[in-house]
Image 1 (cartoon, rainbow, N blue to C red):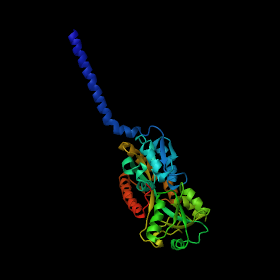
Image 2: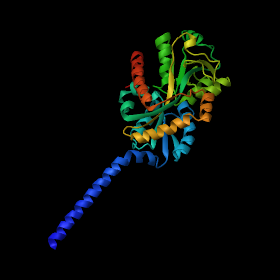
Image 3: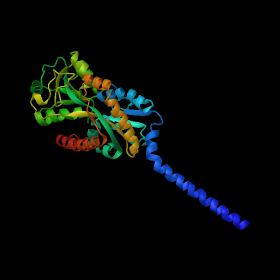
Image 4: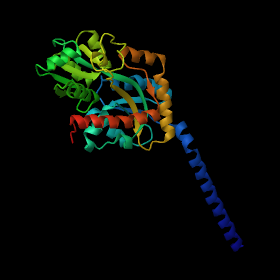
Length: 334
């Protein structure tokens, strides 16, 4: 009896072990689907790389409420400005890769990485590009009392007197735009005054503390329409429908000159593919809502969206592009 009992005990233990292994295998097999159906399981934080009032912040806040409905969880916007989006980028790169911490940033983050190799962020290595939406042109806005209304007049004026321009920060795309257009192409020097965000740079130009502001177009639309700053040029391929009276750089003597700022959603590296796909689908759904598209157009945004794969390729192209610009302009900070 004792021997039989021991045998039955061993058989019983073997059966439990096999059942446990089978259960684990089933759990592993089901995990991608479960990740998609159970995500999100708590509120989502959208970490914005710039202060309130700028174009990227506008996108985050426009999308947050709609994403809350689509995903069934509250979506909260948190601004973490600094280092042209680099501070927010590092914060999200170090977050748990479960899709509940999402970065909303622009290609200024890529420029900052190129200019500051010791910044601790490698966008291609540390983040997963999810989707880009609503690209923005950049506008060069002048103080209302500046005696120049066109790009040609501005360049001529810059040859006769010092001019200061404000940007959303060192290493932002608007900063690099001026360095490329004026220093490299027009061969004139302007003095850069960095600010914390587009709103502050525009306020300084509006009150004539500086002569020019270079920012993404949407934050400047209302001020240009009200005559509080003068729109000199925009960097899009065609004029902005929100400011049709402001010419493009290409129209103003530099054919082919086009630079846009994208608003991109990113997650930490190693975030499960099913989670990325779930958020991508929800954000794409929001981007295609008629009221969102109408609002974006009225604010001066484009309504184009870019898929995960294409966005990843664009990020890599941005790294190469701005590396070349920074090296030629000798703008590296560290």
